[in-house]
Length: 126
Image (tube, rainbow, N blue to C red; front, side, top):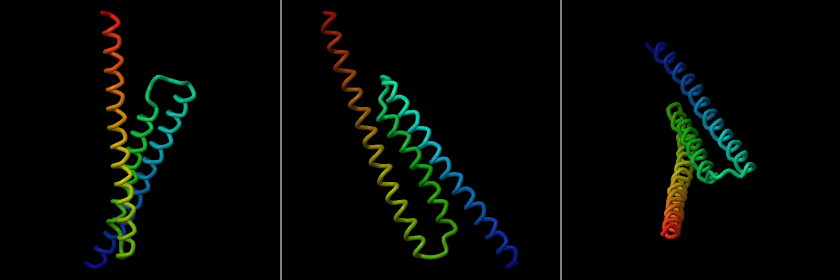
């Protein structure tokens, strides 16, 4: 019975480690692709709001990275490791919260700017 449990523990450890690496790789891919896309848009001077796109990409990348950290807590063996992982998760959670707050404010500013432009156009038509 002990051998079966040890075998299952080894399998769980490998599955969690592989899943953690995949989650973190996904976060890195999202971050790099978003950065390249936004940099290209900045070079081309597109009309799109690059800051908003970049913020959303960073937020999504952080979500993947935080998912990897949460998975890593499954195989933690010591309290010290758990404390470190908890601190990392808290920091990434705070960053994600701040980025989402910035995205919300940026969208609000865009809507207000569009409304002002529409009212100016409506006044000119009258």
